[in-house]
Image (cartoon, rainbow, N blue to C red):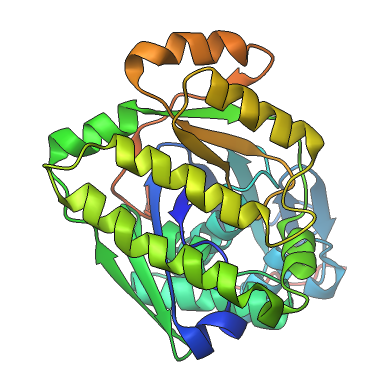
Length: 327
């Protein structure tokens, strides 16, 4: 869940001007289960996601992310299943979370452990360099590290700094945020490719969005500042983001946003690259009922902040022994 700085995590921007985002993970998960394939089937590998693939050679794999993660770690003859709490292509980093979780599972299968940094770097390398998907770096890093963080980008590198905030204040922030599902799905890379086709044209807006990361961090860290200022800042960053690409929003999203502001929200934004997915609003608790009733055609998704990144829930490494051919 990215609050501020989205777009400044693109290397084409941050390698020249620097970049930063303020984001958090929350309690919606993806689950990746990996084991070596039992030798009783006419195929060597089975992959179960929203499709089922049963193949005998890595080159036959249709899912590009699975194929390249398997290739990178020399993974063979497996059964992999994926389940997610959230729909794909909705701006909440599901693809990058899948990449990070899958890489973590592959290493665990081999009895190895990777650092959060290594997981993030490998996921970025696969999605951005090997698969050439347009986008930034923040989702992979957030999925690997977890928590409420400021992530800074510079010189083809990144640093992660946890936000220092009192637990009561963090709880208040969580309670003042409402998440609505629009029902619209889109490919983030398509939106990013359109938005950043001429990144120099967006420089001023992105620099303004970058400056808001500092302001937001100060608000969260200063107990004497009302969190309502955080909500107002969300409104400002959405207006800036709305202006950097034609595909970031459309008439229906703009209408929903304006209705929410009139119903009591102090600010909000469409999460992710834009084009659909989830709308996040900051709304004081006494006004939330009215906001929910006003947006009654949208699904409200309760959530709580999460402090952890990717985790191995069940650890049972397996030695790989190639299946012998039987004739």
